[in-house]
Image (cartoon, rainbow, N blue to C red; front, side, top):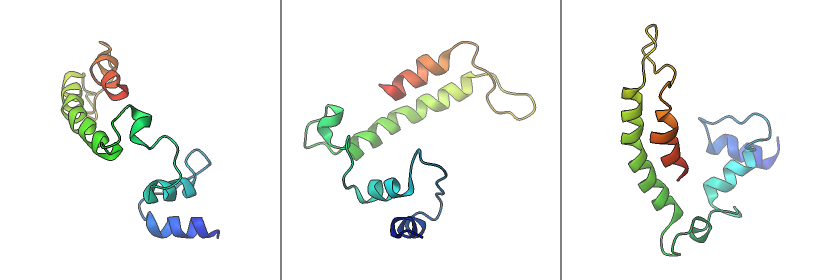
Length: 101
């Protein structure tokens, strides 16, 4: 087993990677916050003094109630109780647009 895979196995007991879309060594680099393009505040249009992690947490806190509202607004599957289709398109306008903002 390669060293990176062994370290990833130990570091991520609840994560299993399959295929090459998100390789195990990338998870390690993310966890260690090293050599990752696109992770600096400037890459997100933030001032250098604002950590990306802080901004991501702030954005996630903003999105959570929008998600709960969307789940409540969608029709439910009578068998599972889970949200069914989205005939109104609210998922795109009320949540996904905010997520990708």
